[in-house]
Length: 409
Image 1 (cartoon, rainbow, N blue to C red):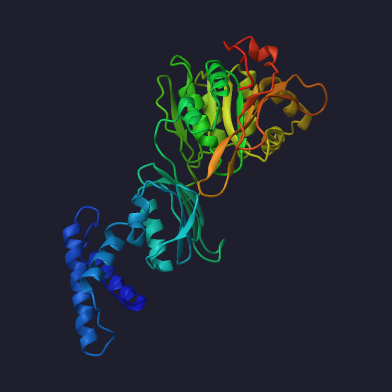
Image 2: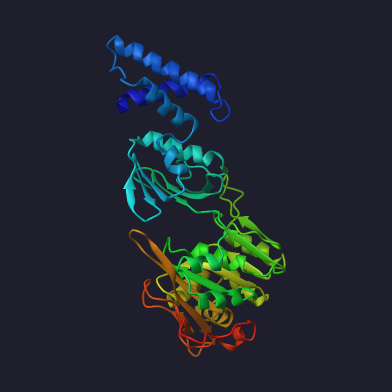
């Protein structure tokens, strides 16, 4: 089954499908007939000396049908629940399984076929990938995955990451059972979630920031108005009072863009008790300074190497808004409003281990930098997350119902 034969048959089948105006998603039977015809035509030509005959034409029919009506060689891979991430680099496909092992796809693929798979995934969204829009992020596979793609001329070849995220209802109890938290730390965060506190969740990519954010939202009281905005939606938490919002890229005419910063501005006018930003990357951070001045709490994630570094990263992101506000003023606002920074980390390997490594309280600033106090910490992911003995600062302690653990966690 040569690549040349596959490409030729697939090209012929696509031409017939377009010519007969067949919709592969609704008329699989006709697609199979067309592909069978294309395979038979190829076999006749091969027996006449044009090409090499197929030893298993039925397998070729199934492969081309999957390419046109499903996701080609990636169909089975994208349907698996034990695959966390899929990587496409030109014609190469690899993936991370649930144990954190990187594997290569057994079935061969071509660059053109992989591009077709990406276009099929994007067809159900309002996003596109072409020369005028070579960078794209979108929710795909019915909202169960986030696709990030970079195409030429920005990349040498098509480069794609598809991150699967379970739509299960993450809870603090679930994360505790997985070992990401201890019971004492979980009880503390549950008490914090009942207030309109401001919490920053930091960590490297893939460490579980969004899962922890979802668990905190799920622990919020039903009467609390929670409004969540994301660049590409990943959060899936039942809300009694509140809603979810997703940013929108510009259209073909360059108009119609709705940025994350735009969403935070709008949400401020909708009487939120807590504003949730799935991932802070830029100028939307400045709008959070307005949120705390309006009395709303917030919860967001940010990429960082440590809890303390996350505070500096948030200030730097806010300065990207270009509002000519001094850094010292932005830092002062956040120092007076952020209650906690929760840092999560991951250890690659088989299996991958994830967990909270530090819960840091932000105290009233005593100098130009942030003043912080660790409340829970652990040396590494194999050690328990223990209470340091420090109590929450008065502004947080006065709002939460929490009894310090009698032991060390």
